[in-house]
Amino acid sequence: MPSAKILEEKKAVVADLADKFGRAASGVLVKYQGITVEDDTALRRELREAGVDYKVIKNTLIGLACEQVGFGDMKAHLDGMNAIAVSYEDPIAPAKILKKYADKIETFESRAGFLDGAVVDAKVVGELADIPPKEVLIGKLLGSIQGPLYGLACGLQAIIDKSGEEVPAAEEAPAEAAPAEEAPAAE
Image (cartoon, rainbow, N blue to C red):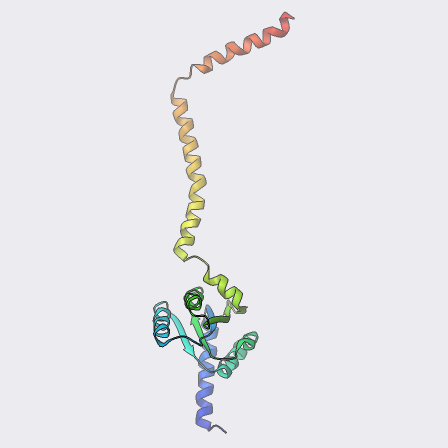
């Protein structure tokens, strides 16, 4: 039977983890088995630079924290060696970074996650990881807005350039229309 001190420490860990889950923009649960120390160090550094909190915590403690926050569906994925990556600012950062390592290491995989207060499966986590960076999305949006405006500006400029010229074809047009009107009268 664990001592009261150990139980209090575990309760504090669960309360802290539940608080993090509640404040987080997103989180990803990963099976971190098979990662080398070198890769793990690089992974942790990259996550830290992106502002992502990454910890290896016992499955029972993660499960208790998930229950407190309402992520009970995530408990189905809590078997084996797991770690949790939580982001408070960028909801895509943990999925993107962890996918990079999951692609390199066969046994390292995303299992589930949470986004906007809802539990998501590994497929959704993978889709999040495939979203282009914010700067690229902004560039695409501005390009799609700018394209029609550019076309309109070119069209208006063509009209202005054409109206500035003297068009001799405009004088010939009524002369051509007159013979067409005379043809029915001649019959």
